[in-house]
Length: 224
Image 1: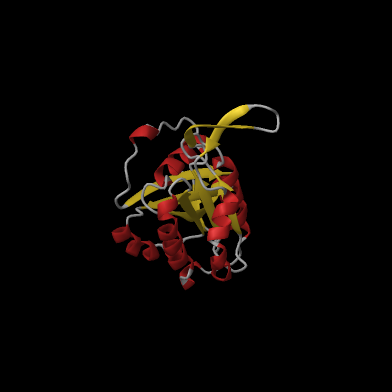
Image 2: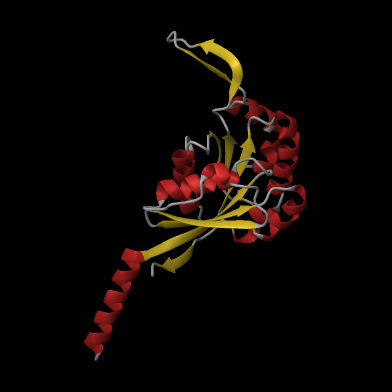
């Protein structure tokens, strides 16, 4: 009987070691039409085998919550994509305490709403419930060209001039938020959610950060 119990314990421990996933909850926040849901769909497509998601061109503004899950190594990321309309931003803080990371998406082509995005961002990072949580800021829509305007590159190629704010532009605009960001892991990543450019780099960075953040231990889930 004792031998059977030891064998069961050994096999149970081996099963958990091989199949148990450390689960991390990551919020996807930002204003409406910033590209949050498109980013989530691209993430699921890139990191989930045989995933067939929504047609990207048919994605509409999120009203409420979209949920997605991916596995990266021994980590499982559960994404909560929250609506960004002004009247829905009051719901964001209901999810802060359970989150392990935040992805904040900025529409880098919409300069008119940049101050509005910054205001929502600053309010978000001011919450004590998010203290020390890794923060990935996505400068989305980096591929949008200026119609009819071309530039010469250093290799003598001609290409479209881009009609978007660069990462340095966004860093400058958000620079006075630095004290509230503090010493947490933070990265500003150029991204084009529609094509998937920058998605892998951002997700891989986030995985490393949430795994090493000892102040927010993961939830453990068995694969079934």
